[in-house]
Length: 446
Image: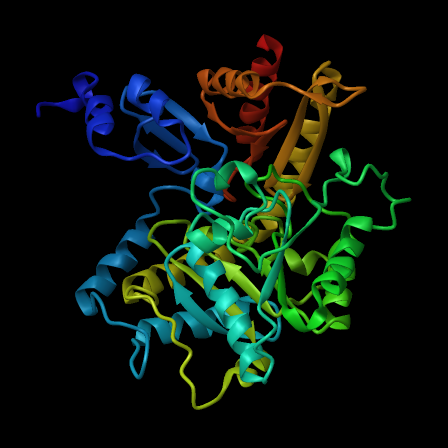
């Protein structure tokens, strides 16, 4: 095929052979892919034209420890030589899977000490829903099968998780909705879907969970699932009282609480797991992305000991993945966890997140910049056409803004009216200054 790096060969081969999600396919066929990355090191990546960017998105909110960590590559090679693969299901597993899960249990919130391993965030979420249904059925309550989620929430794009996700845009042209997945309003104070103001609202968005459980019937609801901070929805964080209230409602109605920490876990928000900011312990935590900084496909569900005890019976929990608990992924994830702890990346996320949030708030001097929000290094910046009415720009304008920022060597993304910024947890102050300078210049051009 020749040397692709000398021309547009990569673009043409991509157009011929890859099927991209997340883009209108007519645009893909006509224009190809704008950003094709060839190398990465630290918080920077380089494209096929040799242009370098600060990746202020950590890939898809996942490369927590940065690109090109030699110790992770070494851990993979060592494990491949020792044991390249063995399954973790039925009556078999590997020492690598046991070692990782044992160490992970020490890092997780107290009480969540048993882990099911899978390969992707969507798989982790669907595993959690099956766990919840199996748990209740095993306790003689097979009618408790519904999983309540939130509007604006994102939980993956497998068939079931697509319908648990609260974004109608991802549910087009895939057939009728799957029953059993009711929604409650989003928790989004800047654009409250209930037209209320915090704190006089008395957290009506949380009360909506109690109302929905009562309407659906408590004996039909297995679990409530939510992201502690909206990820794909644009780094929107809840008021501090929100999840403590959600936990009480779940306890009141005998409903399991599943927290989707696929983005927020492993230090992203300045705690090991985001729920620890509020002292809330869920019944299950779904993990992926920052679990292994996406160096290999890996995900998992951590469950309380009580949930596991409630599952014990003569019936099998029929659920497995051929590569779930893959020994190479487990060895790399173990080394990855050691890096997070040794380099205190959780603490760095808290410090740099506070600094980044302050710098983003300074941009409010611009006429189209609304509030900045989020937690740790998962932050969002509202960009509005009119500050008084909060009118949003059209999608094309937001894409243009993202392009303006990228031209200045920084990768971010837009989520409706928000720009999302979530750099790797190794980011330094001067690098944050470069990120903010690019955003500021992009805004000025807009």
